[in-house]
Image (tube, rainbow, N blue to C red):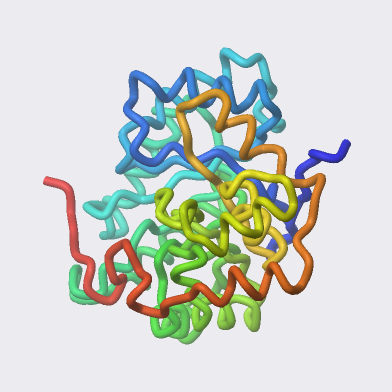
Length: 283
């Protein structure tokens, strides 16, 4: 019971498990095995994307695990090449087909791409609103949206995103976006929660881990949880998949939380692309 994953309420009346399993940079041939192991350990939230190229294997793993569709929360994201509304509709159909599912629990715009498509991500979002209305996406949200992008949606669209998935970790707290999300009842999800491992050797993190008798990864993931964010660490190593799951039976005190938060380097700590400039579209 100590490892039961809390559900976080969304602004549309649905809920989402606070801990998930991510499959970014896991090759298709390894995805089914990794997801299967995660489901065996107890994860019930899987985060994938069209651009990861492994949606089909995620669906395969869920079916092989013998779990009912309603037992697993599944997220995917719109490919950057399909922002125009008609393309988004076709891409969404392809995602459902690859997963072999009738609906998604959450579907996100992967990147705002403000320098592409004449800067129009609003019409893309309006296509996602259609998916929500017809029930094929129970919740909809965005990924990598900055405050200005969110404010534009608020001004021009009807539905407030349920989720904003952003880069966040001890070296890059992304506090301005997190604050906006909190103020507007948007749940923040943290991608790259351990900065692809870069924070695990940090002396502060190592010291806190030694004090509480946990691994550095567990301590950083716990820090995210206590900030109220959703995390979905990725691994193909069975031991680490299980280790990352066991983060609900301890807490960090206020001092430890402040020490880890104090590692924030601001924009210099960002390791992924800047969403205001990122314009990659797969060929």
